[in-house]
Structures are given as C-alpha cells and as structure tokens.
Length: 227
Image (cartoon, rainbow, N blue to C red; front, side, top):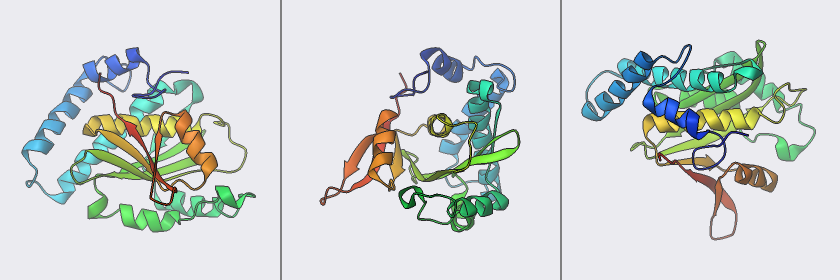
C-alpha cells in the first residue's frame, strides 16, 4: 500500500509530484501553478471578491483534488465529482439497506446537501465516488474559518456489492488529504464516528482518537505533514 501524509496513503514520490508540479495527463504543471497562484490570492483578498468568485475558486480546488485522486487510483477506474441532489437521495436510500444498525448513518444526506450547498458551504470538501457510472460513496467536510483544520462530517458507502471493497475509505481519505494540502490545513478531523469499529478502522489509516470527559470519542485527528 502507498503511504498517506502523516499516515499511509501518499508515497513520497507522489508527494513530490504534487508539490513540485511534476504531474501527468490532466494534472499539468500549468494547472498546479494556477492553484498555487489562487492560494496566494486567497490570502491577499480575504475580504475581496464576490461569493460567486469564491465558489468558483473552491470548486476548482475540489476538482484538482478529484483529478489527482483519479490519477492515483486509475487502476480502479474511478470517477470523482461534486455531490448532486440525486446522489444525496440515493445515499438516503442506502440507510434502509444496512442490515447492521451500527453501520447505518444517523444523518440524512439530503439535509447535508441543503446545508453544504449554500454560500456558507462554498469552501466545502465534497466528493461523490463512482466506478463504471455507479455511485458507491459520498463524503462531505468543511474547513474551519482559518482553514487550519478540515473537518469531515459525513462518509458513507453503498452497502450493496462494491467493486471497490477494501479501497473505498482509502480513496476518500486520500482525496480529503489532497484537498487539505491544497488549502494548507494543519489537521484533518473525522468528526463523530458512528461506532468503535469505525474508530479502529480510522486508526489504521493513521488517525488519533480524541475523547471527551466521559471517554466517548468525539473525533479523530490527523496531522498533515508537509515534509
């Protein structure tokens, strides 16, 4: 398995390609140069520009994260894009198909869609994972106002037969890490894990559990390593 930033998903060679702009196919050096330029502009124009411009900028950042992940996992023939309302409706149907209630998401994807697809959600992390045109996973997250932390609030997969079995979470977390690095976040948080089994799974990917005073895991953290 390749290695993650601070954990186990991104290889050192791939990290060099990403941050040095040495990439192939859809990930050209000019595109990476544009992203770097936009990152500088974001800092210089904190209170300038319209919300539309902000939305377009961050949509471009998400698309870069999607493309880079597609390139990394091209042997799986995956397609990544922003979540649409039909995806959210389909994911709500998945909740009825889980035989194990511990694996059933306790949120509604249509509600998350309506919350994230607003002006306040312009900077969101947003990915729908497909293969051969079929939807297999969704994820929503949002950076803090300072962009120091990317908080992931929802991850779910299709409970039916999955050709990406064993790789779905790996792909989603890889994409989240790329987006966090584009924004120069210091940490990624996986918020409110549904059960202890998921906590253990996230720990295998390098995340550290954080508990409240009662001993309940409220979130897991990953330090984003830029070395």
